[in-house]
Length: 263
Image (cartoon, rainbow, N blue to C red):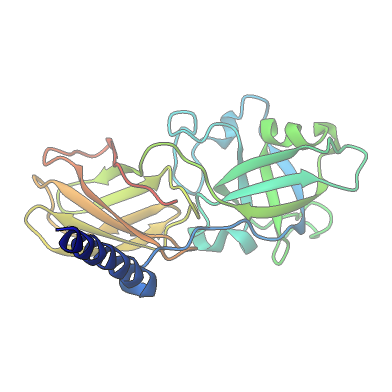
């Protein structure tokens, strides 16, 4: 009996080790974790006042930033960083450097808007967001964390960092039963979206096209169906699936929360 017991234990251990080795040798792919980038030099200004009312909305389509969870720690990116909207939702650490106005504090902001070029002004005198400049036009509350607001513009060091979000992805619906426009919010990890698909309870996976900012669209008849989404990060290439993220009675203007997010 002792020999039989030893044999069974050894066999069980071998099966467990074999399973672990199979995982280790690539049968289960572990998606990459987004790491902070190196620090780089840029400049920062601010727009709006202390209430950050002027920062609501924006090119990414996040709407009221208080209601959608982004608050006042936000920034508009120059076109060099904005990447035609694919940078929406990305997160950055910013610190003021080499200026008397600097506080020496690091602020973390989310990209929610674009800072467009101003070709009527020189790039070093008013045209701060003209390509190829890397520039952050921060909300005033965020700017006031790193420097005295009276400075107007300050040199900064910045780096991409993972977006830390609580809760799952959020999908805000616009459109109708034949055209679905979805804004993807509260994205963790890289914070950005490269591709997206939708699946109705009566359809297969349907590829959605990038509309603008953080929105994707599908020209399909999806009314009256529960909807699932498959989303791929632009930065990490990780893909997550939000099954039955919206019920069959979904409607435009509503926001639906999932249980999954990027890490």
